[in-house]
Length: 470
Image (cartoon, rainbow, N blue to C red):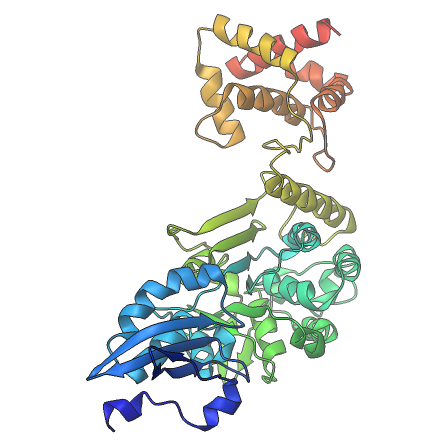
């Protein structure tokens, strides 16, 4: 085919893409469009001069944002100028278009193939596994949904796969009631006298889990969403991690959700097309690495302390990662209890709000107001008078950070006292109310005074100075 005919716009494309002819320097421009649906996502206009195709204008339509275009254009321009139409189309599909636009991307993703040049996903939500800890994850998702942040892709593993379906197809109140009423009888077939699985009866039948997924999996509501969902599972042969993208026309979607949540060896493995799959958290409990490879720009990962490994990842320049992981214990991995679920729901909501809001503080607790200036002055004097710096290393280990500013040190001191006397973390505090909560535990506070380490003695000295002035 001659070069000029190769880049000539077919006649039927004019009506399909609604392209209006434009002239520049009295020479008609030639248009080329790609996209799924009646509206093109990319339009290229140019002219042929000799054996070179020169790009004069490129336009974006539905599906391409300004941020995507800014990152895609430098490499796209070099590719376009080569004049290879098929190579342009292939690169455009992999670098710019969404996962759900082309079938070959879905097939490779379902087979666990991680390509080098992946499509751009601006906002990716990563949900990890954790069994009964999924109530903490849902508490954080409620706050994230209330902010209006809409992800372009959700990658769920184990219980995170179930929460991703709840996030898209159910209301917040329905999902909260589900987690408060969750028990092992909703997941596996247990004898009437048992409240939790027993090792000698492993593995258990997952028929109740399949019924639960069928109840909350609603394709019509999922069809109305623009968010794509991918779940991770583990192929039993070789224990290889597999990521599958849910498609609207795939009747095996509930099976993939069940496979991702089939915790081994408690639950029976799930077979899909003759292949046996285990829980996705066995090999990839939190798919941050896959999200970074998919070139996501805004990444939010909710880690609910799963037992599986998290593959090593590297955040690339231009990518922003928010990884939410509670410092508190979320209860037993298999502890499906209403009281523990209520605590985890409140804790997840508070910690997500603290992570999103710049005016909230805290390491273990949630503070809605900063430290008073008078407290900072008192703490500065005490810190200058202390020659032994062993307390600082202990405080950094307690807060799980490498360095602490003077204000951060005072926050850590008060939280250390509150943690030692077991103040509940399921509500927001101010510095004054947290100090009052510490004072309401005289028995535990008396036991705390018997400690002789440097951090405890320094914290008690600051506490006596502040409470003595009240």
